Length: 146
Image (cartoon, rainbow, N blue to C red):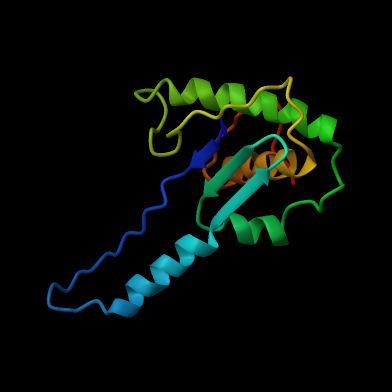
């Protein structure tokens, strides 16, 4: 059975219009759909049959332009941080009255005893860094850094 790890962040696009007679063109819908497709990052480890799908506007651009390059952090370092982040994330998902349910929608199924590989850990770790910086959240006891 294929297991799937999902992180879905509110990917809603709001269009504010003060003039009720102004017509929104279909190009806006096409652009919005293009942004959704381009801002979806899919991470897979076919050997283990695991996959992470991250939908958050801006993450894919941030990953390529701001994140440390692959190889900068060791897999062991990222696994330890990911475990800490996932535990905190999952606790927040279970407390929707205390934490914004639009930010913490679904739990992340991350087992520290499974070797997900470097790519999965790299992108998951960087997503947590991006998330904390973008939404001004703190998921662990350490300062967020790039």
